[in-house]
Length: 479
Image (cartoon, rainbow, N blue to C red; front, side):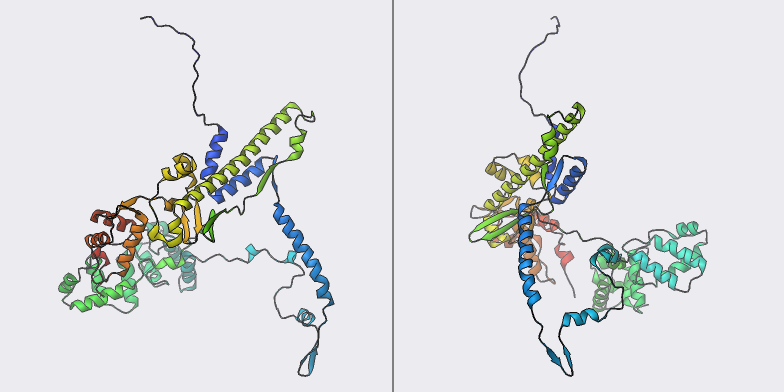
């Protein structure tokens, strides 16, 4: 069969990922704070994109200014009455207080002269700073301070020493005995248990600080820490030749020790979540409001838009302006489309989860992305992007949008119950159990079956592990 080349026309449809479409998809899955960063960056890079003030804010400012002007004359006409206090008579308290210098600090003539708020903030002290302060305040020689700084520099946030003595001695060019002597003195620093090389040493430092040398507590930490973790109290009592009540008392004391003494000086910042959607109940209806705080109103600069095509610019400048105008218009449209999509998804979730908003987590119903996609006529991938890292503030609390999508378990009545509701019920059962006789996973499964929820023991185990709850043997308490 002969091979030949020929030209042929063919019509077909395909989706082309243009830069504009990629930008719209990217904006859709950004959080509100990330979107603010993108908008600020675009305002800096695109000279034809500018921010406009909200009309409502302008009217509000004008109304406030007018109200102040109406009140001001009344204040000026106010007469101060005499106030008798013993032998003195004070007419104008404001003048009196202004003339009385009750502050020994620096005086400022106006708000502009005051230091910025950032200059008044203090840095939170770290564990390293606290240990170095004790080192420099203690009776240490110059060489000992140098060794101590090397040791403290290798202490992690939990308070454990993460370098070996040979490494410290080599870094300081000293013998290991000299490094060990400084280390033993640093172990006496606050917080108690700091600079330990492992958990056993950390707990021993705290026990000896409480004058428990030679006690059952110290003997357990030295030889039976692994048995203590697995709660083999009878085995420990038999090995130590003591009564089991002494072992239980020692275990209770050890449980009060801090396995991470450095965490009180932790530098982790608390991450606050800002809701993207607010849901309010007004009468029998739920209203959805998008959180647009920090998102500026954008518009295209009218001066350049009108100058385009008038001959005031050369071809290169006009091409540049046209490109920036298209970029600005597409960004504005993409943000508006993003907000409309989030609003539609939030409204759809509210329709599906109305009982949850009314009565709580027990009434959370099973929901998948396809349900919402079919409800608002969008693709599942779009719903997935919208619900990523977005949070909704509801009358029941703050929830991630992903929280409302969960699988379901069947009931004996033929209905379905959300997996999150079952997890919450498992947590409640475990919280109410007798810690001396904790419930097994099989027993919890039987209790849920009695509540019409068809669930297997392995599913209870799976949900319990997701909730980070220990097994019955791990939850058991002997004291």
